[in-house]
Every structure is written in C-alpha cells, then in structure tokens.
Amino acid sequence: MKNSDEKQPAATGKKKKKKNKLSREAYEAELARLQVELSKLQEWVVGQGKKVVVIFEGRDAAGKGGTISRITARLNHRVCRVAALAKPTDREQSQWYFQRYVAQLPSAGEIVLFDRSWYNRAGVDRVMGFCTEEEYREFLRTCPQFERMLVRSGIKLIKYWFSVSAKEQERRFKNRIKDPLKSWKFSDMDRQSYMKWDEYSLAKDEMMNYTDINQAPWYVVPSDSKRRARLNCITHLLSLFPYDENPPTSGIELPDRDTDSGYVRPPMDDQRFIPEFY
Image (cartoon, rainbow, N blue to C red; front, side, top):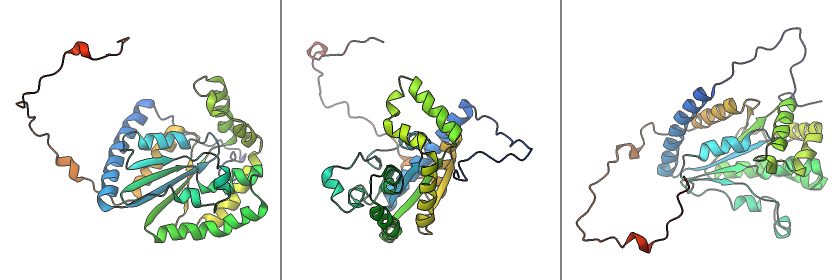
C-alpha cells in the first residue's frame, strides 16, 4: 500500500478540484516578500542568540533543495548555513551514529538547514540495507531521546517532510534525465528509490510513528507544485518565530565618506583586467 499522503485520490465519481496554476509573476512577488521576512527572522535570531535547526526530508525530487536555496538566497551564509553531508567515511561509520551530525549543530545566533539528516538511517539506510536491523531499531529507540535532548539544550528543532506523488516524481526524474543542466542530479540511488516506492513509503510511515514527537513534530509539505511548496514552507517556518517586524538595522543611514586623505590611485595599466565579453 502506498503512503496515504503520497498516493493518488481514490475514485469517487467526482474529480478532485485542481488548484489554479500559480503564475511566475505572483510566485516571484510573494517569494520576494517572504525573503524580506526571512531577513528579519535572521536579524532576530542573531540578536536573541537563538539556535535553530531545520530538517528537510522527503523522497528524491520532492523539492527539498529548491526550497532550501530560496530560503538561503538572501541571507547571510555565516548565519544561515546548509548541512548536506556526504556518504560517511570509514572513520565516521565507526563513530556513534549521531556524532557527525552533532558537529553541524548551531551555536548562538545561527540557523542550520539540514538537506537530509540523521533520518537517513530510517530511510535510505533501511530500504537499501546500508544498516543492520539492530542498528535501525536502535535508531528508532534513541532518535526521540536525542531530539528531546537537543530541544532541552535550547535548540529550536523543526522537521519538514516534502510529500510528492508517484506521478510527479516520475515526471521530474524524466525531466532530469533529458535536461543536460539537471542530468547530474539523477543518480543510481535515485533509480533505486524510484523502483522501491512502496518500501520507502513503509519506511517513512514507521519513521514517523516513532519520531513524530511533541517536542519536535513532523510537518508535511505537499510538494507536487514546487512553487506552492516553497511559499507554504517558508510561510510556515516564519510563523514559528516571534521575530521583530522592524529589526534594528531598519534605521541605518550611510555616513559621509572621507575623501581628503590624499590617496592617489596607481595607474590602471598596472592591473590585469579580465576581457569584457559582454
């Protein structure tokens, strides 16, 4: 059986009303507005010394990366950074499972966005057999305890699951394969995940059954429409913080420039300029 939030609606004799397409103009205008709000949130996090972790999980091609890039586009990367860890090394595989993720956690005044996270153990590791049954069960037991510990330490932990339908994932995969600018995104792991749809659905259901806790609940983002998913996710993220509407930087003015220092610029011919092709 396919996961309830990712399967097609059952035939009832009535067609499900389709939402009107969100135009590019409307999308970009709203995204620009939300990015201003994200900059206010950033100022508030820095000023209050908050520690924020946002986890983005979901199937391959569900739209996680696109949402993350829209969140970070206008922010200071020293304040808001992305943690997208590669395959663990032999040394990391010998460590406590959560150890390499702990190293990525924020200090005061930082936001960390996890493009996939410790939930790899409940997803790809489980389905592809990259961990033992004992390791998997240990993760389900300890993950809620680990996350409660993070929350008690003062970290604001937010978890998003991007839910894409089988039909839409297939369309996006085909688009990746055909597009030379996106073909690098389609890996052998994507091919495997495409074939193992039901196994990933069951793994996701069990994962949420154990880890959807009050201290750090899962929020599901319907993502068949990338534009709507991005706007809805960012709007929800902003709603979770009592940030200032008018940050201190809003009243900054540019001072006069000192132009009487006697500085003389060296000859332009002494410098190497790149060719101006455009």
